[in-house]
Image (cartoon, rainbow, N blue to C red; front, side):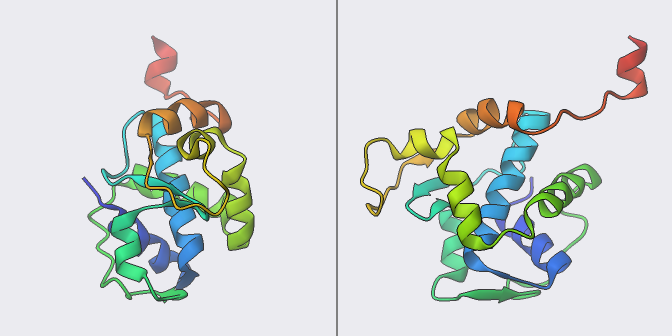
Length: 157
């Protein structure tokens, strides 16, 4: 299975550079899209409901104290790690969200149930280590993202 770092490498490979805040949110939405459309995680790592939106600790540890990341900052991207279907899911997220500024992605996710529920009654700036569950992401985003087209085989049944 791919890791969140593999997904980050792919995004950086496709876009050449990205702010760390934006990269965190793009990885989050890549996981959400995959959960909603396949009901399987893209990677095993979890996101925490931080005040700035979802943050994956494993990814954060790789980029903390950095504002902008460039292609190869995490090493070479290996195309064999992600399947064609996984790359397609990530590409859709990039098509939908790349033009957003990092703060706009934060505002977007702050309006969505998985982050809101994980935050609970915390004050806006209060740090939170609560995990945003994959189950809540799958349940919420299944209606948020468009459904995949049925395959010819599924239509025939």
